[in-house]
Every structure is written in structure tokens, then in C-alpha cells.
Image (cartoon, rainbow, N blue to C red; front, side, top):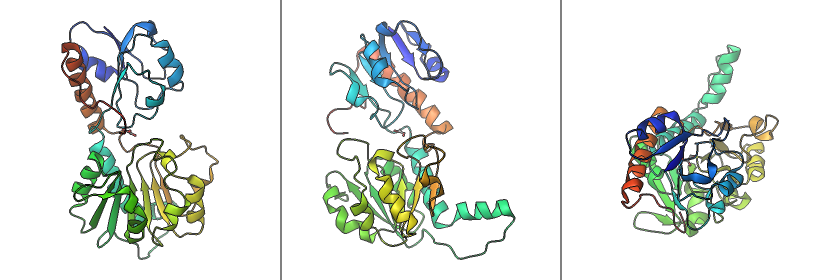
Amino acid sequence: MKIWVASEDIADGLAGLPGLDIAVYDGRGPVPAGIGEVEVWVPPLVPVRDVPGLLAGMTGLRLLQTVTAGVDPYLPHLPGHVTLCNARGVHDAGTAEWAVGAMIAVLRDFPEFGAAQQRGAWSWHYTGVLADSTVLIVGYGSIGEALERRLSGFEVEIVRVARNARPGVHGQDELPDLLPTADVVVLLVPATADTAGMVDAGFLARMKDGAVLVNAARGSVLDTDALLAELQKERLRAALDVTAPEPLPPDHPLWTAPGVFITPHVAGSTPASIRRTRTLVCEQIARYISGEPLENIITGHY
Ligand code: GLV
């Protein structure tokens, strides 16, 4: 069985499994030979440039196992007979940790202090703080749970929102009433047709003066121009690990907008994610080979 995997590390992990013809394709080097015989594809963390083109050549594909929680680059282009599985869980720790660090960085003015340090300037001033604030988690799934666990020592109130209400979790339809109560709003929703542009001018307008928007979801969820307008007024602040477009071009106005802290989609790019990805992929391929039920199959809404 021919399998293309994202890294040498995953290839090493699979080496003990029987009957595999493994090629590493990390999206940067040349496309390996034999695309038509690929049965399983584990694409790289940063999507290859031409996903539809590559998928069109994979006429024998049966399973696409991502190394990301998000499957948005693949879902619209996959034929119905190909099983799509995500890497639910492997980036929970890294992403939740990034979100805590990013909200504290913005609230405690770390980017400004970093810039002042470069100038040798002792820029004493009061800052904001996380303690006593309300953190609204929009898209409460496994990353949201990991974030809540990490925030449990920070003396904050957590408000949870998911697509549909369930015990302890508000439904998305309640957002208009919840947004004005939050000091920090963390976006963790998947990129789908439903969430495209959901954080628009109206959403942002309902956020409290001085609140912080944290985007660890996808750039497509957020209307960048609407956020820019709020940042220029210095009414909101933001921490963004994801942007639209990505990479953000060097001359994009978001880079220099007041009150924004930007990282280049690195929340899940950590040694913990690499270790957990290898384990998840190897266990999943072992299941595939032995005909056991697969985990994290994406169906319908995800
Ligand atoms: C990272 O962006 C992921 O989707 O896991």
C-alpha cells in the first residue's frame, strides 16, 4: 500500500508496520513518483500550494489523514469515497498554551515593553490583567477544554459557546448577549461555510471597550477590515495567530495597527504537537491496515 506522509518523523514511526510503501512529501520538495497509486495521504502541516491539483492526481486515494485539527483545505475538494480524518487533540496543548500566552501578552503590554527594550526605554505604566476578567470561548471543543483547564488558576470566569447549546455551554445564537460581558473573546471555531466572516463589524461592535480578541481559529472567520477599523479607533485589541490572507503580506496594514499582536500560525507548531501527531498517525494507520474502525472521521458538520 502506497502512503505519502508529511515528515521523516512520521515515516520512522510507521517503519514497523507491514506492507507499506512510504514516501515523505513535506510540500516543499518535488512531488514523489506514483501519485496515482497513493492510497493514504498524510499531508503536511502547512497545506501544499495546489491541494485540488494534487488530489485530482490521487485517483487511488482512500484515506486522507490530516496532521491538523482543521480540515478546511481538503474538505471541499475530496471525492465522497475518500475517508477524511483529522488530528483532533494533538494541538490542544500547544494551541491552548498559545492562547493563554497571547492574551496575557496583550493584556500586560508585552509587545510594547519588548519594543521599549529595543530602544533602551524604561517605559513604566500600569497594564491590564487577566485576574477578575471574563473569558468567552467561542467554539468550545477539545482545544477550548484544554484552554479552560489552563486558565483554571488565573481567577477568571469562563463562558463557553458552541454551535449548539448543551449543559454548561451556550449556543452560538446567544453570542449577541454574551459578547458585551467578555473582557477576552477567544475564537476556536473550525473554518466552515457557516463560520466564514462570522466575526464581522456587528460582532466586534458588541464587544466591550478595551476587550481583547484572540484568534486561534482561522483568518477566514474574521472580517479583517472590520477588525482594522476597531483597532484604528483603539477600541479593541487583538492577538492573532491566523490571518486572511496567510502569510500576511509585509505591507499589510494589520502589521502596524495599534494594539495587535501577531504570530505566524505557530500555536500548534511545537515539539509536543510533533510527538502527539506521530503517535496519532501511527495508531490510525495501524487501524487502517488491520481493518479496525478509524478515529476522528469527519462527517457533516465538524
Ligand atoms: C492548526 O491550525 C490546526 O488546524 O490544527
